[in-house]
Length: 135
Image (cartoon, rainbow, N blue to C red; front, side, top):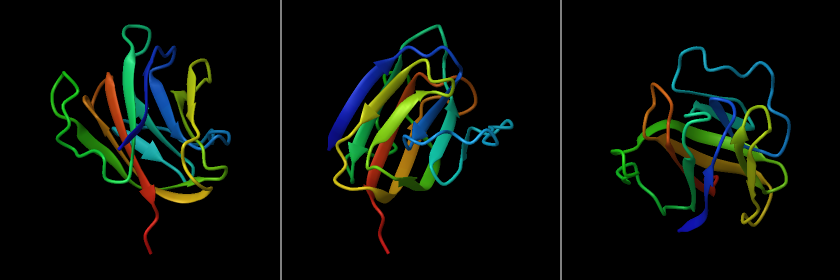
């Protein structure tokens, strides 16, 4: 089920997805399509050119074969993030553009899958699937 969606104009070509906490300064892409730490995932997006379409789904509401209008999405991260206050933030790494979804029931570790339409360059579409951590 889709719980949030936003078309975001970003000023920086790296988008951060995850906790409301500060993004660690050591988190860097280093040529990879995505990078992650305990609280955030970062991906490369189109900056200052187009709106980046971000959709947030809860549980099993999305799959990798969703169409963004620009081709199929490719999963670049599938792991766990600590969302210490139960909110999920989407925005550029410099904090100029930011959207917060507070539709999760509780704080804690959540399984997060991030898919983009262009894993090697600047993504214009980003899908995020959030589900409770399973033990």
